[in-house]
Length: 253
Ligand SMILES: C[S@@+](CC[C@H](N)C(=O)[O-])C[C@H]1O[C@@H](n2cnc3c(N)ncnc32)[C@H](O)[C@@H]1O
Image (cartoon, rainbow, N blue to C red):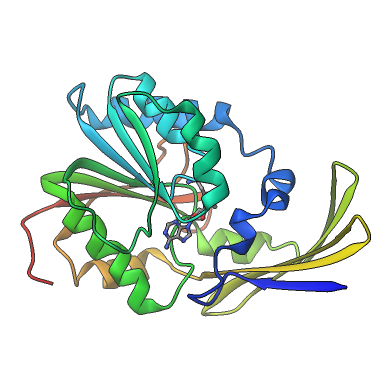
């Protein structure tokens, strides 16, 4: 029997991230990388100790855990029930996790909202804007937002169309495609005699696309970095597009 899953419609987008196979395939997306980046970015931001930080689309909480260790109060939110269940094992009075959609504003306000490691652009344009409006609403005036996305130009340049990755005896067959709208990755494999087919579709957003989105919000770009070492963004060479935002004043949207 073959199972097909997509994360590109609002009803079933979560299957891939919620599946154990996502974590098997990307086991190298580790806590070491998160620790280094969080140390660097928090040093740059100079937020007061005890500040409230929202990790929007936190996955299993690798960044949230590091942020809390450095003296901040953290709430991690994600729609993946399995990831939140795992993250909750690390909870303490300054570190909490809940299942929540990042496009829906919370009741409390935060000093900073982080959206890390390509946790944006999985839905249609309206929902992308909802995510930015929720970020805006979740921030105190003067609060800081961070969006850490891929650099679409680099993705297009370095695209490996077909790849086979073997992890835990599972042969993942990965096919990638990029067009002007999407980066599409299909992941097929067999496990315990069952065939699985997942699909991950992310909007092919450039810095200019983000600028257009942000024109509809009260979030203003403060700085743009191009990697986890916080080097300046270069649209041809940078591995990441890391946008630092500041909330001006509350809009009515
Ligand atoms: C590439 S993973 C990154 C997770 C985490 N930030 C990390 O670096 O480990 C993207 C995450 O976005 C989450 N996600 C996607 N759309 C979401 C939404 N609308 N609300 C909450 N989480 C969402 C997925 O469940 C997944 O955990």
